[in-house]
Length: 128
Image 1 (cartoon, rainbow, N blue to C red):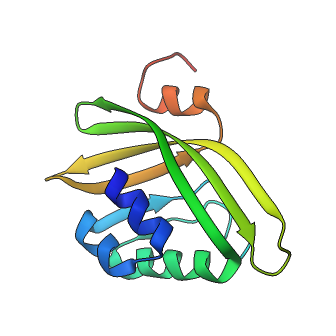
Image 2 (cartoon, rainbow, N blue to C red):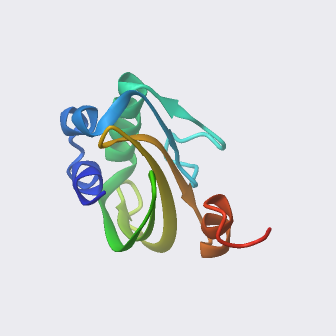
């Protein structure tokens, strides 16, 4: 997980290709800056597009994995996200939770949640 987030922070699409399965699926929680609500980025090319969109929207983005909890083939990660808007210069700080499904040591599915409750429900640790 730390390598995936480090590649994201660096805007390194080539590294992302080595860390995700060929059919990897990414579901961000946020819209704006070129991202579409409920968008799904599937496959290496789409993941590269996502990295490029982030680079256009943000002057700086740092996704810091604060806690990682392994749950079989899934990993629950608390992520502190800090960014600065490229056009506005406005800083953003957001605490998010991501759930990654792993296959063969690579991410197969990743989804970001805006609340801890949503993420816990996604991995079956609480009732909806």
